[in-house]
Image (cartoon, rainbow, N blue to C red; front, side):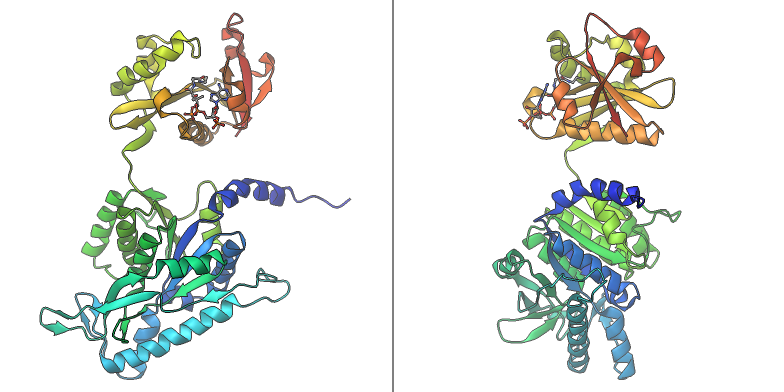
Length: 441
Ligand SMILES: CC(C)(COP(=O)(O)OP(=O)(O)OC[C@H]1O[C@@H](n2cnc3c(N)ncnc32)[C@H](O)[C@@H]1OP(=O)(O)O)[C@@H](O)C(=O)NCCC(=O)NCCS
């Protein structure tokens, strides 16, 4: 009999929740000219096409900086900048329009592939572009006329949404059109940021030559709040890296996050499949910038004890949670994770690793009654599972009297007492008669 490919089966199953989560969402994807010029670009296009096939609404914004530089050089036209903004003179703009038009045709061609035995087989994607961006001239700055350099004035949100509803990929360049019938040269990052904000996109995604935003030791930073992103951007700018892919993207991500785009991602254009890994695996591969919220899921400290007591005491009195003394909480506080909102502890859970170093008990899972129905319990289970995995544990068990189904719906299976680690068996309270459930991590 043919050997089954269990890796494929496992991978497929593990990615299913992400497929469901991303379906019908709007992603603005920003690709720079460096990315288009790279040999991996056709793989990136295949992956973007795959996202479209999975029901994700895609707006693709492309830049052309290196291609424009090259064309200007070849034609002996000097590149002129004022405060990092290109001065788009008439002869420069003629060339820029040619370069951008050519790239648009290349992107369209790539998205139209459909060869048998390639990932694009049967995809049949509609690509739409048009006059969706209204621009206005930047005008004169410090006495210098920036000529055809423009900025975004309006976005035809309804027009783009209509195309996305039809499952088309909307491809947008850095050229905008004015009410006077002129066209203007815009920065692709400004266009992408404004699109993400005005379309109320769920994500903005950018590509750079690194694997994400790197810290000063060269390691990828998996997650940043806008304030951390700003700090890293300041460091990059201080070191002169003003126009690198990372700096350009960070500026765009900070602006879009501040205006309500919940998540932005930065991945590598060099590494095959980085976009898919970022979007469909638990830990991702690049950097995501997430909107800071007043709510935090974090490890507990001694200062949280009073808040935890307020939260769990009523539940202990109802017999839903095992009683814990304040002293016990003080000793075990490091094992707790809390959800804090505006200074109030509204959720908690604890992880007690067993002596066998294989399993751990999740206990004291609770959310404040006024803050239920918002998946905070799920977030706590996810956080504790992640913590257990990081500790190298392979099993997570819970003892519960009245939330059996709640845990079963979250992947926990009922087991017999003998399956608990020996020291936990010895502590089992037969009077309480809790059900034991285990989740494989
Ligand atoms: C279990 C708990 C942490 C979940 O908190 P939450 O994520 O904020 O979610 P909710 O309470 O809104 O429940 C989410 C869903 O689970 C269901 N649910 C809640 N408690 C349940 C239980 N005991 N058994 C079965 N389902 C339950 C809810 O009806 C809701 O389902 P719905 O979305 O289909 O309506 C919270 O209900 C709680 O603190 N319970 C008391 C303490 C407890 O029993 N802890 C577990 C023992 S360790």
